[in-house]
Amino acid sequence: MVLGIALSIVAVACKTKQKTTTTTETVAPTQSLLEVATVKYPGISQTDLDEGKKIFTVDCVKCHGAKKIASRDETNWIKIIDWMAPKAKLTTDQKTKVLQYVLSQRALEKGAK
Ligand code: HEC
Picture (cartoon, helix red, strand yellow):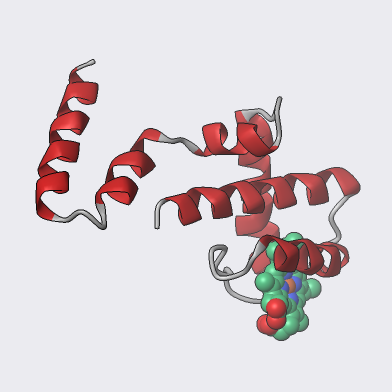
């Protein structure tokens, strides 16, 4: 409640100063990865996302550095994960989770920009 009021004060403050950045700065912090993910994948759990993130940050950085999620579009990521999953020796389940994490995280980052 207090946070809600604080945020709306910030929102009003931003609106008067910079019209162009208002939406991004006020909407982004209120959305969690799980909320964004649920829109794309109804029924997805925080555990699924955590596992996907772990695969991305552990298994997917063994050969190269962490790749930037926001710099590739969804179609690209689907192709890349099809290509990389065998390299990382992922099971079908792990592949699904890492893809769901990447596309959700991408949506979250894009929403924040
Ligand atoms: C066995 C080694 C290996 C593993 C494990 C691996 N990759 Fe790669 N990856 C490569 C190589 C080799 C390339 C091509 C050279 C490069 O871009 O670094 C590549 C390229 C990429 C690229 C750039 C593709 C492009 O458009 O050029 C992305 C993004 C990527 N990997 C993501 C991932 C993800 C996500 C995972 C986990 C599912 C993963 N990689 C696991 C070896 C690996």
